[in-house]
Structure formats: C-alpha cells, structure tokens
Length: 208
Image (cartoon, rainbow, N blue to C red; front, side):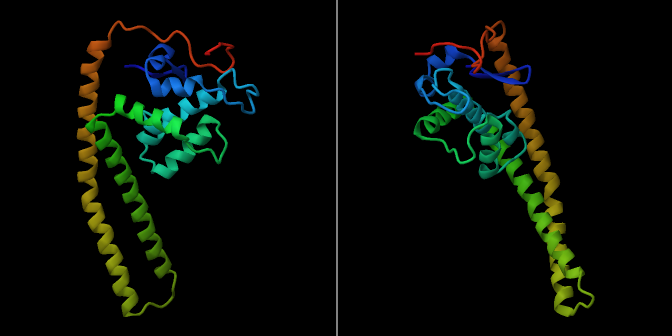
C-alpha cells in the first residue's frame, strides 16, 4: 500500500489510500487553523502532520536513514515539517503513526534502524572517551593514576573499534535483505497508479 511518495523533492500523499485508513482519515478531516491557513480549510496543518509522520516512521526518511535518536528525530521532523517548535503529536497523530508503522514496517527494517542508532551511539561514545583523553593530556604533569586512566580509556577505544566492523557488516547484510524484499514487492505493484495530486497547501480542495 503506497501512502507517501517523494515527487520532485516534495512529499505527496495518496489521498485515495488515506481515505481507506481510519487513523489517517482522522488527521485529514480535522480543521486546525495555523499561521499559513487561518481557517484551517486548506489543511496546511494536516499536511505538516503527515510530513512529521513520514519523517518519524518511514524507513527511507532522513532521521531513519541516519540513525537519529528518538529525541533528535522528533526535533528534526518538527522543524522539517514547519510545525511550531513546541508541537508534539496528539492522540490523533500518534494513532496515525502507529497505523503507518503497522503498514510499512518489517522486522528487517526495524533491525536496520536499531543498528544505525547503535552505530551512531558508538560514534558518540568514542567521541566522549576521546574528549576525556584530550582533557587528561592537557595537563603538563601526569601521575601514575592519570596514566592508568589514559591506558584504560585507550583500551576501551580499541575494544569498541574491534566491534565496529562487525556492526557495519551486520547493517550491510540487513540492508541487502531489505533491498531483496523491496525488489520482490515491486513485482506486485508494477503498473500501479501514480499519485495524481499532492496534499498541496496552495490547492484549494474541500476535504469535508
């Protein structure tokens, strides 16, 4: 089932598919005024919320392709969607996110996300340990306890480095598995209909 697509760098929505999904239809039918849509009839806020849902839930979105943490992904998605900085998903959006994940997630996609986050966290750990080493080395004089601590830090860095290739290979294998799954799925959707219209805030359409 195709719900979101990227056309010319813009997120577009398959409104016919959305109408079949109760949780998505609930987002679409709401009338929420915002700065660029004072009456709420152009559905600007709905489009922003769908943009957020895509960014958080879709395997191909920037946060998921780059291993962002939940907090990092949230702030990135809010900014990218043009939502207010203090915006958070309400129950209607949250239910739509759960529905979207049920429709598009697979075990291999979920594993890929977790591995990406783990690899990114490994980088953060290495950076923190390296900063500790730099901090120690800034002192002109080091006693035995300082040297022992530096050696401990270095040993930890080497232990992490030994594990990274295995993590990267695991991720590579999972991505190859996902690619094969998607190639199989493409066989079933060949000749499918293109999305004719996007949820464009500049297009005056009555969704009620």
